[in-house]
Image (cartoon, rainbow, N blue to C red; front, top):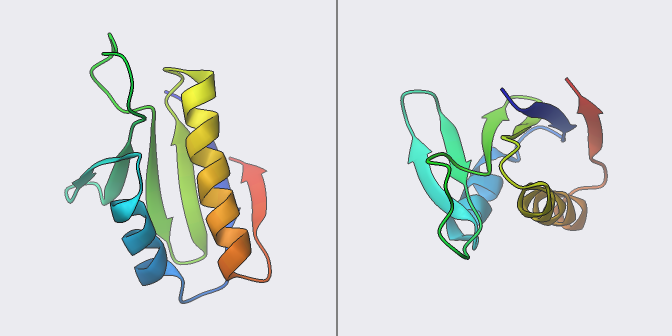
Length: 97
């Protein structure tokens, strides 16, 4: 279990954000069974066999889960998501779930 954050965004963001994630440097895969994007930074081979973080797109925003594999890597992914959201939308609110 990791640490989950909700990033609240205005409605209608899902398609653009999904495209951003799929084209990002940290996109690893999409799991259609759970509707989550698995995110992982590149670099030295990691011991863990799971992503640094995952994201699910909800009707009111994003659920971001830091899988606690690497604080630095997950933070980098989180910053990229927030930076994108703030460039595209007037407001993004973050709360720990």
